[in-house]
Structures are given as C-alpha cells and as structure tokens.
Length: 333
Image 1 (cartoon, one colour):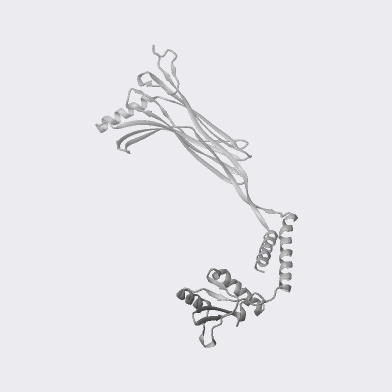
Image 2 (image 1 turned 30 degrees about the vertical axis):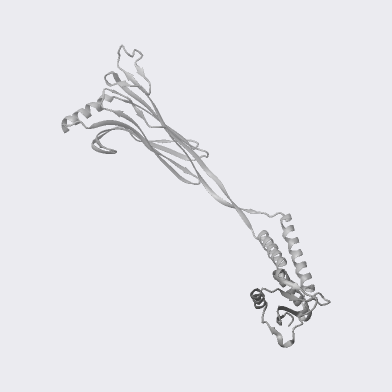
C-alpha cells in the first residue's frame, strides 16, 4: 500500500508538472555596435646627413635637435548594425606638465594646455561615423615652455607633454540612446635630448542592447503517457490491495511472533519432545521474553519449547528448566 501510494503521488506530480505552463528565457539582441580609437605618427626631420630620407617612423629613438614636426593621425570610428542617427564630437589638446614623483605617487607642479581642435562635431550616415584628425606638432615649442617653467621655479622637476585625443559618440537608436566617450593619449618626454614616444594601445569596444523574453514551451502528448500509466497502475494497486488486504487473525499474529523469536534467539533455544514436566507448584511465570532470556543467561540454560501438530509451541509455552523448577513464558494470550 505504501509503494502504491508513492507511485500515485509521483504520477500526480508528473501530470501536474506537464499540465503547468512552462517557458524558457531567450535573450534577444536588439542592437549592437563597435567602437575603435587609435593613431599613427611619423617624425619629420630637418635636413641632416644622418637621415637623408627626412622621416622616421614609429618606435624609434629620436634626437630632439633634428625634429621639425611630429605628425599624428588620429582615428575614431563607431559602427552599428542598424540605421541610427549617430554623431561624434572630439577635441585634440597638448598638455604640458611638470611633476614630482615619490614612490608610486605623482604630484603635478604645473600644467598648461595647448588646444589644437576643440569640440568638433561630425554626423554619420547609415548608423556609422568616422573621425580623422591630423595634427603637426612642434615639440620644441613645448620644451621651450618647460625650460621657462624651470627658470621660474628655479628647480628641475620631471616634465612631459601629453597629446590627448578625446570625445564621444552618441547614437539615437530605436531602442534608446547610446553614449560612448573615449580618451586616447600619446606621451612625449621633454627632459632628455634623445627620447622615445609612448603611444596608448588602440581602444576597441563591442557592446549591445538586448532584452530577455519568455517563450512558452509546448508539451508533446507523449509526455503524458508515462505519468498517466503510472497513475492507473497506482489506482489499480490501491483498489486491489484495499479489497483483498485484511488484518491478521490472532492465530496469524501468534505464528508470526513465534517465527520472529526463532529468527532472533534461535541460537539459544532447544526444541524438546514434550512440554515441561515440572509440578505446577514448581513453575514460575515470567512476564516477558527479555526477562526469560536474562534468566537463561544467568542460569546458563537454553530456552526450551515443544511443538504441537501445527508447528507452534505446545500450550504456547517457552520455558527455562532449573533442576526441579521451570521458568515459563506463555506466548499465546
């Protein structure tokens, strides 16, 4: 009955689960875009015998005395996968700084900006806009300013020039406004006559606008077959057992109890041909089986019994003999 009940509960759970509407979450991409920012440069030289070609490319060591102009080409691009109103604005400025370092900290002593392009706006087409800006810098101009600052301070702090290309892209899409700011810089040392130029790594970014939506799942009819069959089997088992199962009779309980005693204590029990022959006044009744087992252990005697025609203890008795006296337990009430 317990197993049939569990099967019934499991079948009901399976049917309810299959009947309950279920859905899965799916991410739907509405709009995606890419942004990139970078630069390239070349150093143009005054006429000299060492470099007759007059130009040096990137990642070289440069002599300040030979430099005529530093030419930098900045580029920034925004591209979306759908039509959108896109605009870009940008500025280019050179920032000369004097600073002092202590350990990992850096404190700015002075700072001056030299703007080249300020708040320039471009409108794109087809969801795309590209910014290109070329600047030609006279590095010696910034060194002269830094030298004057040293004279005023009567000190020689560290000094450098940063060429900063900054701005933002704004896209008006059908799914909301996107704003992507950017800042890109190139570092020019101003303290040594031989120096290298440090360029920031290119900026690349990809992002998107998405929404999560719930999609209803349709259960196939075959998914109801197994829990349905299990439910029918459980109901049939419960009906069958409910009709045929009954409570055991007193005789069946007695027989079951004796078999249980044999399984548990059979090793210390002895079957005799006949029941106890002790006189009635030498028989002592024991209240329960545990007490009889304790007496047998104390006397180091077996628990004895004799079987009747039905294979059960004669008169329902178990006993422990002790010379002229017997200790008896009546199993049959």
